[in-house]
Image 1 (spheres, rainbow, N blue to C red):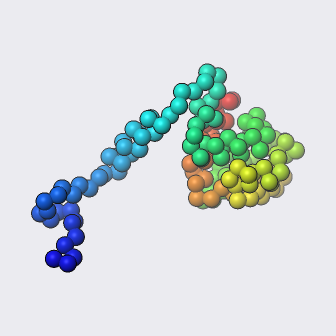
Image 2 (tube, helix red, strand yellow):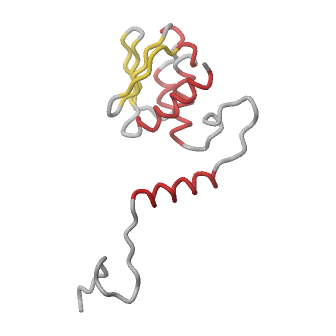
Image 3 (cartoon, rainbow, N blue to C red):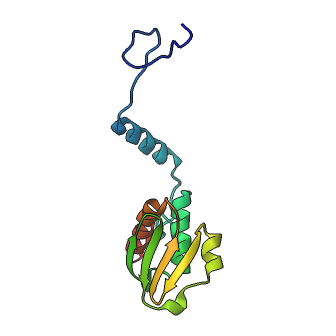
Length: 134
């Protein structure tokens, strides 16, 4: 009786339910649709989002000289890797750090913004902004 832990598959008075990945994603999608704000016409929905990853993507794009300066986008486990047309348009490292980056690695027109493990989410928003502005 001391370790009478409620686990799935046992006869218990209270119902224990396992949720599938599909259930979880449906719940998150419903929460996200309730949190969205109306978007002003002529602006990207991502730029107006309150999502912290969307804010990082917007900030990093500004620091990289805008979508017209970005020629290629890629990422690894922790870094957003971007090729730019004109490296002189890139702002200083302090700007990127103020937007949530851990640092910036520069090698000519190849730039790596060290984002951390959230980089896949940030890249999704980054890609969407660049695509919307193209």
